[in-house]
Image 1 (tube, rainbow, N blue to C red):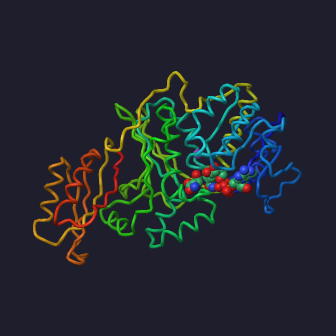
Image 2: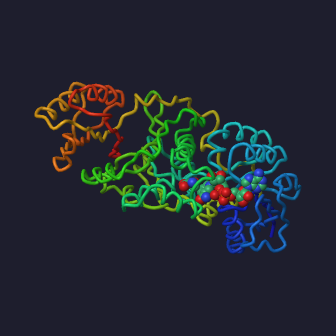
Image 3: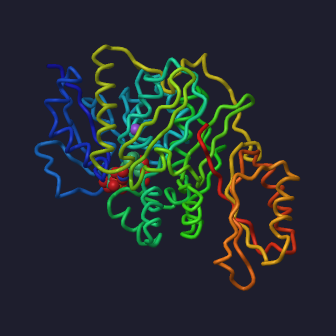
Amino acid sequence: MKEVNVGICGLGTVGGGTFNVLTRNAERIAGRAGCRIRIGRVATRTPRDDIDLGDTPFSTDIADVVNDPSIDIVVELIGGYDTAYELVMSAIRNGKHVVTANKALIAMYGNELFEAADRHGVNVAYEAGVAGGIPVIKAIREGLSANRIDWMAGIINGTGNYILTEMRAGRAFDEVLKEAQALGYAEADPTFDVEGTDAAHKLTIMASAGFGVPLQFEKAYTEGIADVTPYDIAHAEALGYRIKHLGIARRRDNGIELRVHPTLVPKSHLIAQVDGVLNAVLVDGDAVGQTMYYGPGAGDEATASAVIADIVDVARSVAAQSQQRVPYLGFEPDAMESLDVLPMEDIQSAYYLRIHALDRPGVLASVASILSEHGINIESIMQKESELEDGRIPVIILTHTVQERQINRAIEDLESLADVQGHVIRIRAENFS
Ligand SMILES: NC(=O)C1=CN([C@@H]2O[C@H](COP(=O)(O)OP(=O)(O)OC[C@H]3O[C@@H](n4cnc5c(N)ncnc54)[C@H](O)[C@@H]3O)[C@@H](O)[C@H]2O)C=CC1
Ligand SMILES: N[C@@H](CC=O)C(=O)O
Ligand code: NA
């Protein structure tokens, strides 16, 4: 049987998982790939004594992988932008295919890397970078290729979802984050998870593969989970909603929405039931309607599953002697569109508002009248008499879908009311219609 030689760079959570699964399931994988996937070399800065590398050549210098003429596929699992960029570019220049789990790298430099890969007749595959083990890139690029994709929404950061889930059970943010780090879910810099950067990387890639637009990470709107309080989690629940950290990409006539932020979702929707490190991506296609992809978004062997699926894909194309079976972003270059990312003021969403109002007659009427002046309809409103404190009562409102610009103006007017104290808390809400 023909052999394809892979070189693994980075033997951390994902690298270790990839080595173990490739070794354990070697026969099964060979049966699917039509060739034997041989681990020709492993390079990592920090050796691991819990993994038996057998007689696999090992070094601490990733250049040894890229410069090894016997390696067909470089598997980049070191993470980060700079060294990973150099590694992937050198691999491409050396005529090697690349499989990576590095969504930061693809979101930031994918356009450039794909172009270089095309010039050198090699492939760059990145399934593990989006929603970890869930084969969502395969679904979008291949399974849904008949559709015009109108929107996608997903829980695409396992660490963030793990934190929000545990907070709902009353646990403290910092303690849960530490646990997610210990479990290997978090990024090397966990602010990427908490501040939404990692989700924005993934959303950028999904949107490009779904809509056929170039990667434009720098235009994604990103809001993290650090300001989500147990109070708002509880009150959203009382309204029949759950707060999830979503990445949302929506095709509009004049551009695309590309945004990551905490979002209220109906508790009855499947996506509200996605807890812990699990991810879920909802994709709306004009022919198929809504489909949802659900599974582990992080973790060693779960992510390795996607890394190895890409290795098999590339190995099959090597065997078929074609450069790439599927275009990088699922569309041929001349079919790509140049849709702009819309400013946040132009997005449409429903909103949860929490207002702290003085307990005076007529306050609710003034609040409702300001919302009405801005053309905002109220879905529900709650005044928490039981939470009267220092003469202030929280008023919780859920609006119908409006433009963000309308909410911003309404919030300005609400905050200028003498009876409203402090800032109005605003969380976007979605009904997925
Ligand atoms: N941990 C997870 O569940 C997931 C991670 N990813 C992505 O996979 C990639 C790897 O993540 P993890 O395995 O979690 O990271 P990690 O920190 O556990 O492992 C990174 C490995 O790369 C090695 N390394 C880093 N820089 C190096 C260098 N310059 N030279 C040689 N070795 C170097 C480290 O020694 C370590 O073994 C990242 O891009 C991450 O975003 C993607 C999906 C899920
Ligand atoms: N840190 C990421 C890892 C997978 O991409 C996450 O928590 O989702
Ligand atoms: Na994936």
